[in-house]
Length: 437
Image (cartoon, rainbow, N blue to C red; front, top):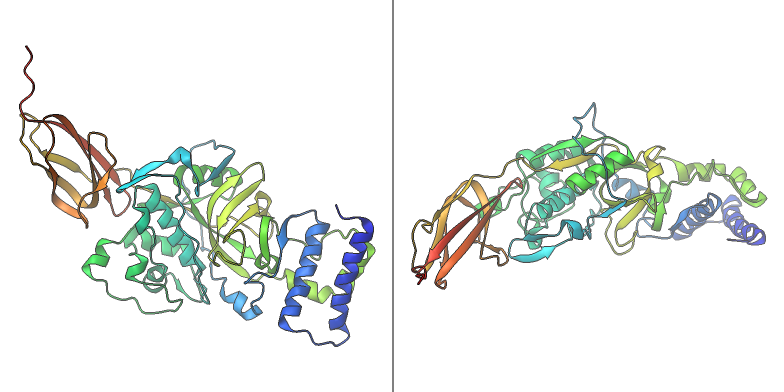
């Protein structure tokens, strides 16, 4: 803890910095940035906060450039609420969730269900990044290939009708993810512009991913934690102020630069003399859309993925935010959405090999699937592997090669574009069964 002389000295340094402005000295942009950061740091200290502020890549932007980053719009009217199961563990992080470890297409079991942090650039498309990040996590949780978990924010920005680089509605964008879906990033790369919606070729259309449906989550810590456990990462919104843009690490809470309780007289007079500057620091900047990926009751905080890059803001592009920010001017957790898989997957049948009599090698497995689906296949408990390169629709067939004589089990899993999954198994005999003496 800083001693009283240390606090007086810190306050004096802040006062000297502000005084240079008051007496007409010209400050460079970066000097002004550092002045703001010192005021925020002092306020964090005065309020006993547990986070650090610094000259991040966002804090160094001009005021106009900062405002461009905040493009979330609030949904007008009431939303249909998700049906949530009660109870939740004391902590959850979808970036590392071994309790939900699952095998995926052709890959070993994974426990990482959060895609990489991206940067929205000079475009107010945070709303597109939040919903796309949620769909990427949805794709991973429903058995999608991690190597394909990079979907197109530009498709949401250009094609959904939910907004533009000047802002958009996550709810309308989520309607688009349900009704139309979006292709891979490689099919429609991000340009940070309001480009026209292009036509997609057949290959890109086969790579489109969708959600089953979406519901709203009530704005309470208990409901958000329950929804995280039940449905995975959740897009949401929050109000942003200057201090958030300086966030480096720790559990963020918005500091009351005007209403805090100064612990020494110099801090008190700094706030009195430079009240206009402090007003600028606490003014509402705009709404921001982000993705909640976990929480920790021991820290009383949510874990959140941002879209301001991973190099020079936050904890590798993520941040932690106190539960208390649900109930103050930050209004964290407004318009929180849960992406819900369909209750039933596609109809899947295995018609061959014939299970009623022995078959000979090489073996071919075939059947039907009721709607376009990615298929996985495994024999006798081995890891699933991808069947073919594209989606099957209707009849499907896969050569199994030469199998040894004896009993075998083939298991097929179908995943449609909405995340609906069905699994079927069939036992068959290769060669004549051994005769019992």
